[in-house]
Length: 358
Image (cartoon, rainbow, N blue to C red; front, top):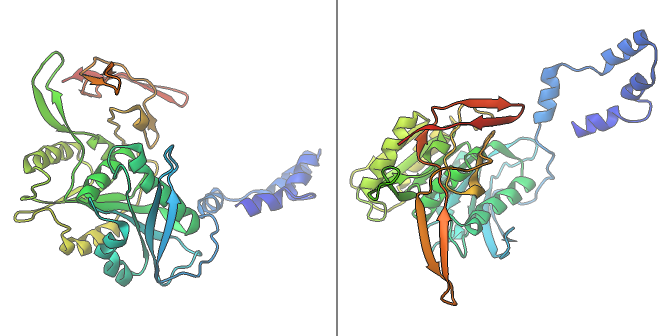
């Protein structure tokens, strides 16, 4: 499309002649030359950027990067490049996150035979250093920076990027998808779960209950959750809580629980997950989205952004710094509520008034 625009704007191009012409009838004829059907224009705009051919195909590529973070931690990712790769078309990508004490080089083996056999899928396994995958922005950079590097180098279909992982990577993939749902066509965590928090059951109450966080953010992102009922690392009672919350959303949610399963990868799920991925594609502009967050850093999803926070304070923490000085942290959370109030749209800004606190 850029080449097309450049050609149109060359000296003596039809566009230049149209702008210079004073006669309306002549201008109309020139305009007919440069008009294109909307479908053709959209097709041009949606074409992926051109990528240079690569010599490495049908191999595992290793690369070191520094995180785009104040600490600039160096880390490595490994990438399987399909044997038939060509930049002339776009390809699916699985981002797979390893568990604690693991690395991408080892974790790649969980999927390698499957993607080699399937033939049209890249497999990216970054290695987490300090911070793991957790809720830290440093942990997120291992995923975001390796993903950015791969999509800049290879012809990856941005609507066919999937995220999965197991153990720490199961937690990481689940929680990262809740924070960045608009990046993925789907998430398929194993032996891990969402973030859980103890919260009061209502304003002014001192009792606490467990809730899973961020699940409404997956309303427009397909989820395939694999878990073992006897997983000692992920309490089954908490799994049931999260599943109940997900069921209420009526989103695209697949749940596989193995009654005798423990804290494991469940390789028998590789083929079903691959088949599931084959039916999914990211909707970049979904009509229905959700946004639940306790952090200002994660205040947007798809076309929705929370620009202001207000509400009753639910949590208060006290700390001491290294000099024994008391530090008080107050976190302002809007009360957990149902969005049953008024939505007002002013140009591109949507104002949401939330009511019905519980």
